[in-house]
Image (cartoon, rainbow, N blue to C red; front, side, top):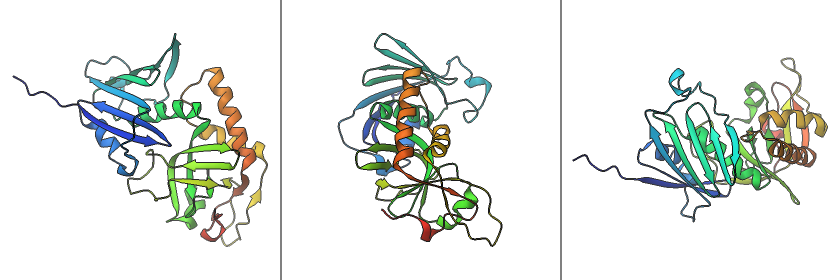
Length: 267
């Protein structure tokens, strides 16, 4: 008799939403424990069950996992939301998600999509950015690595949850980061400044920041948002939230060599 495979379960806090992820294979658990500081014992807000299927039919067999698009096709059938990509199919029924995934694929892309869907309902965007400063008061979006060289040691890059509220903009770190080192203890921060790409600055020239308006900031923010749901109501909500963020932050262009550590805003 074959040994029974034990169901493995982990609950991960993604910007205040607790996702309980279960699977009979260890790969989802490896993802959940990659950043153990996000594990939680809270009662789950969303329950995700993943089944790996070696017979999965999609584009997964035609490309490696890192070349199959993560952007899902989203359809609604009654109260159920259907998500599909080249390597998974997911059914979202209120707070329960059932997933069939091609064997061997990581769950990070799936979980990022689910997080973006739930966060959007909570007036929050998932943005590809770098959070700077010991207090996380500066956000850099689309700025080349060379322009952030002076901020090493106080930079966290990846997908960051961004919320604009009555008291300003709050940013929260998520498990979707570009590194596996432990993240700063201050996961949530009040962010007041936004840095974006600017003109290159000649070597030896002072990198004076140039203020820009919210329209320019919006043009940089929108492409950096993980837009899981591309249906019109979701797109309109994203535009509204991104507009609020752009108006709430002090926005500057950063050329190469800026911002330096001493220029970072402190919240």
